[in-house]
Structures are given as structure tokens and as C-alpha cells.
Image (cartoon, rainbow, N blue to C red):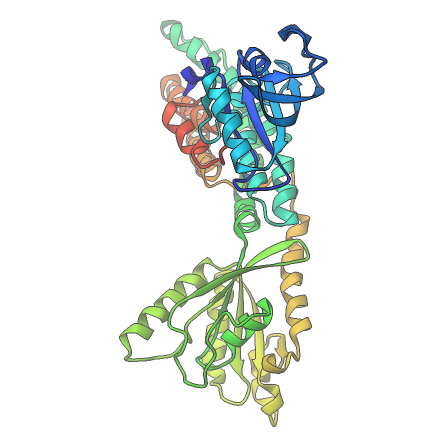
Length: 458
């Protein structure tokens, strides 16, 4: 992929289809000369007339025929997104016009950009580190205020600056230990072990909260998973339909109607939630229903919040209590809904559950505000998390998990007085994992796997 930097690339950066305007991007050494060949403007008499950070009005021409009237903006290297000469052409949104301009650019020396190639060039040219480049993709795909805010903070450096600082300090100790190996016969010690232990303690203090933040970051990025569970025919599917304000799930008086999970996203006060309607929990001989119930338990394990719905007129207090305790033992937040209160005669029989209960009639919209408030209450705890230091990326989580293992190994090695050679191995592995986060250490496969998920034009 690095070799492709010699090419000047182009693509349509706006969404495919017709619209008022479209933006075509060009990046590379030949950007100015290529655009000069196809762009006619009273202000441009020669290629050197293009001034950086300036917008020009003119026409895209082919064989003296006007393709479109456009606005052309020039960003001179290195002060551009990619670090190369970049030109953006704002044209009319006709698919024919877009296609004609792209074809004309290719005829004059451009090549079509691959997915994420503009951001890849920004990374290779030192405009972004790798975690910031990944945050660009997160920003583009953000669907709510919270995920947008996280992506913006990570684009500005976020925890990657902290990772770089720790890695730089560890590099110095690694270099001193490598130096000791060169003088192994003289039994000298250049790296102060006490200072190294202090750095390792600091690294653990920084990494552990980052690892804990992943559950929050992943939920914000992909939607906070809320599993709606409970016995059959308790009102789970009705609740999903009420939340979404549409008939998304089939509702029936027949028990066992829901046999598979149904997932839909919904945004409340900037948080995106992923509501999951599940098969009713009960013992059954139906093979298909058993598969659905198995999936229900899988979703319970994945959920950040569980809404447990039961029919206040028809339930087993012992079973409900056992279910709620099992959720609590896993540390999962749960909300208990006593549904169908419009048909209830009494509430006394569920006092021994020792948990706050929301009495509601979902079908009649009674208690829906309390349910929403209870959901938000359980997310407000996350507001105290330092938003500058939140992991949203599985790759970063794995790298930091491996780093922490290496740090523990280094720490134990120093206390056990192992050889500098073995310490050097663990330090190298730690540096490798940390470098993979920010991009100091990369390979072709890693870059391909990251940037292939970008959209064309970014």
C-alpha cells in the first residue's frame, strides 16, 4: 500500500446518487497539473497560479465542451488532510456529471482511490497516528451524540498521547538493558530496577482503567445492549414495539410466539440503545423454542442492562427472584417490570423480591416514562468516566491486555532477579503491543485490515 503513494488518486467523497452537490477529491504530487488541464477559470492562467486554501470558480472542460461549473479548493502540501497536495471539486450532484469528471481525471493521470486511502496517506505522512486514523472511521459511522463525542476526542489524540509517552519511557529502559547485555561479562547495571518498577506501576495504573472503559466504549460505539427477558406472554414484544413506536415484533396471546431474538436500535438523550427482544424463559419440549431460549441466555450474557418483564397476575415469585439474582451475580444492571397492572388485584405477593419494581401496563402506555427514566439512570453512572480515555476498539483492547501481561511478567522478573536478556524479551513484546495501537509498529496486513473497512473517499 505504501508504494501507491506515488500515484495521484481521486474519487467521489459524497454519498453515491443524485444530490444538490457532490465533492470529488484528488490527492498526490500531480494534483495541480492534472486539474489545470481540465479546469478553466479567469483567475488561473498557469498551474502556478493556484494558491493554497483558496476557492476558485470555473468550469470543467473536455475538448472545449463544458462538463460542469464547479468550485475548486486547493490545499497545498503539507498543510492538507493527507499531507500531499489536495484538491476538492464541488460539482453538481448529477451522477452523469460526477462520472464524467472522474473519467476525465483518470484520462489525465489519476487513479481511483481505494477504501480509506486518503486517511492511509494521512497516517503514512505523519498527519495522524493509527488510533486517530481509526477514530476517523468511528466519526463517520457515529449515529448518536455520545459516539460522536468519543470519536472527536480520539481524533484529537485521546489516550494515544498517553500510550506514546509511556512507550517512549519504556523504550529508554529497554535500551539501557540492551546495553547491559553488551557488557554482560563485566556485570554492570545501567537500568535502575527501582525506577523501572515505578514505571511499570504507573503503566498498570494507566492501562487498567482503559481496559475497564472498553465495555462502555464498545457499548457507546455499537449501541448499549438491553436484553428484554422474562417468562412467555409477559409483554416483552409489546414493550419493544412501544419503545420503537412501531409493530416490530409479533404479539400474540399464545405462549412461545417469539422464538428468535429481534434487535433494533433507538436513541434516547444522545445514547444509542440496542433493544433485544428474546424468547420467553420456560421449560419446553419444542426444539425450535429451545434454540430461541438458548439464544436468550447468550444475549443476557452480552447485555449491559436487562429488562425483566413478568405478568403481575401470573408469575412464580421464586423463579423471578432466582432469575434476578443470577443477573446481579454477573454484575449486570437489571430493571424489573411488573406488567399488566390494569388487570391486577394486588401487589403484595412480590414484596419479597427486595428490588425496586416498576408497576406498569405496557399495552396502555402506563409506566413507559418510568421505564425510560430507569434506563437512563443506569447509563448516567458512565458519565463519570473520563471521556478522553475510553477504548472503543477491540484491537486496542487486545493490545493493552497483552501489554498488561508483559508488564506483570517484567515486574515479576525484576523481583525474581532474572537475567537482563529475559527482561529485554518482555520489554520488546510490550513495546510491540503498544506500538501497534499508535502505529509506530505496523505491517501491510494490519494496515489492510484497518483501512479496508473505511468508506471510499475517506
